[in-house]
Structures are given as structure tokens and as C-alpha cells.
Amino acid sequence: MKKRLIAAAVCVAVLLLLGWGGPYVAQEGERYDLYFREADLSAASGGDALRAEQLYLEEGEVRDTRELAERLVTELLAGPEDPSLVNTIPEETALLSLELDGTRAKVDLSTRYRLLSGVSLSLADYAITLTLTQLPEISAVSITVRGQQLAYRDREVFSARDVLFASNEDVIGVVPATLYLLDESGGLVPLELTLDLYEGDTQAGAVVKALLEGTEERDLYSALPEGFQVTSVRLEESTCYVDLPSAALEELPEDADLPLALRALAESLLSLRTVGEVRYLVDGEYAAVYGSASVLEPYTARN
Image 1 (spheres, rainbow, N blue to C red):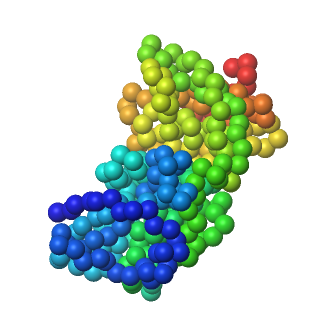
Image 2 (image 1 turned 180 degrees about the vertical axis):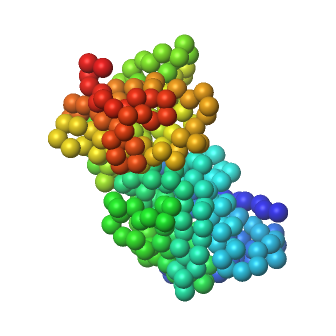
């Protein structure tokens, strides 16, 4: 049985002074902190982006440190109960394994975690790190995706001392873009907006992320089907390469309209002034098809 309460926002200095001690003991059971992002960063106390939601576990629910660490990560992936908090980790991310190597927890996650970059990736890494290093047996955390390190990280092992809470002050620029979204009739319509860029973000990556996250506009919906994944996106000269994982095809709905989804993504990327054409790769290689969609030819503004 579990019960979550909301803990006050805690800055890194205070947490370090407390020594990242073991679980707090309360009448409801043993208390642990799960770290999530403030939904409204402008309201974050002291500019801190992460805040803890408390999880209570009854005594004897877990047998050892590894099982407890797995339980905490599983609860973290499930997301917060407080509506003023949001998960830093993409929906449907799964824990593939968690092993202890001395005082380091080695966390391996599914491919959905690859959707993160820049500050979003840092916040997710730190949320997992803070959640696990509250256990006295764990002082460091490494996070992989299907056993592989993310190439665009600046470090591979995290500790509580590495955590830097981010806020909306981390926005380093903006980029105008046009997202192509579905209306109620199922047709693509353009929506002009301005996307925030955080440290480490690229313009193309910001467009992909915006489409994956969807829009709050009424009667407009992302053309990317549930479970759609992008491994990476990069710009070389004026060509934007979007790498798609073949393994993700199994997770897509049977009625997913991939030709329409890829066209919406390509046209959204082509709205950037730096992008002249979009080419899709599959598992890092050129391919003729991706599911039901042809990806042999590049998309240009005339497609």
C-alpha cells in the first residue's frame, strides 16, 4: 500500500547538509521522496525546477536495497499524483533493469528516454539521481538506454552533488516555427508559434519535441501516433536527418497513419529557415520504407 504527500521544494544545499540520509520514518510507514518537475516553472520556489512528492511504503514491502531502488524508479516512471507537478521522464518509458555495482545504481531504460535532450534530459537524469541517492547504500547513478550511453551527455555517472536545479531562466533563445497538426476532420493545418530553446537544444530538436509533446490548442492534435519515437535529429548543411527506430513500429497502433505522420513532421521541420530538406533514416541507415510510409526520397518544401 502506498500513500503520497507533497513535500516542500528543497534546494541542493539543504539536501547535502542533511546528508541524503535514509528513509524518514513516519506513522504511515517508511517515507521516500520522488522528484518531479514543477508544472509552472514561474511559480517554482527559489527558481528550483524539481520538487519532491512523498511515497510511503509499509514495512516489509521490499526485501533489499536493489528491490527498493527498483520500486522507487517504477513509482517515478508512473508520474506524480499532484497536478502541480509533471514527470521529467517521457510517458511509456519502462525500466528494463536496475543493478547495484558497489554504491552505484546502474539504471537501464527503454528507448522512450532517447527523446530527451538538453535541459529536459538533465532534469530527468537528476530526478532519477535524487530519488535513488536518498538511499544510504547508493551514492551514484548511471543511466543507459537499452544498455547504451547517450552520446550527447557530458557525463555518464551522476551523484547528488551534480544536481543543478533548472528553471525558466535556462531558456537561452527562441525560434519561430510552424507545427503541422491534425484538425477534427483529419487534415493537416499549420499552427505558427514560438518555441523556447534551452541549453543543449537545437532548433530541429525543439520542433520534434513540440510535436511529440502535442499542443494545448483546442481541436488540434499531433499527427504523431501514440508510441511514435525518434532516435535522433541532426542538421548537416541544410539537410535535416531524422533517425527512426524500427523497434518502435511494434508499439504503434494498428491504424497509425505513418505517411501522414512523417509528412507532418517533415513539413514542421521545413518551416525552419535553416532546413531545406528532410531525410528519414531507419536505425541510422537509409531505407525504402518505415512501416507503411515510403522514406526513400527526401521531403522538400515542394513535396
